[in-house]
Length: 110
Image (cartoon, rainbow, N blue to C red):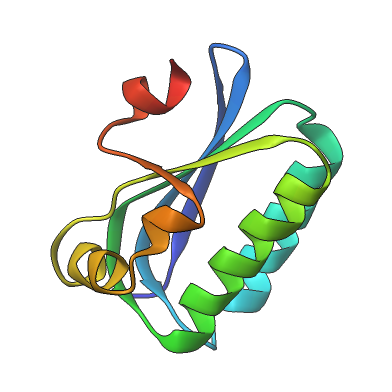
């Protein structure tokens, strides 16, 4: 399954829902969407990773880099914690020390 991305507004934030696989083949599609969000969202961007079924090092590195760049713009970015394999990888890499990772979208919004 390729990646499917849905961008939507929610309570003063832009939420980007990810479904499927984020790998080196899909990162350019993701990059275009996230770059557009950087130009349109000036307060809070939420990356909802709950629907990711796979991520490789290229995809994960891209998400971390985007998050760091968004924070450098003095904007707030949060991840909704991924599930399964992807969630375990994020925990093992201790990415919560770099990025605000919330258990639910509602937690990210508050």
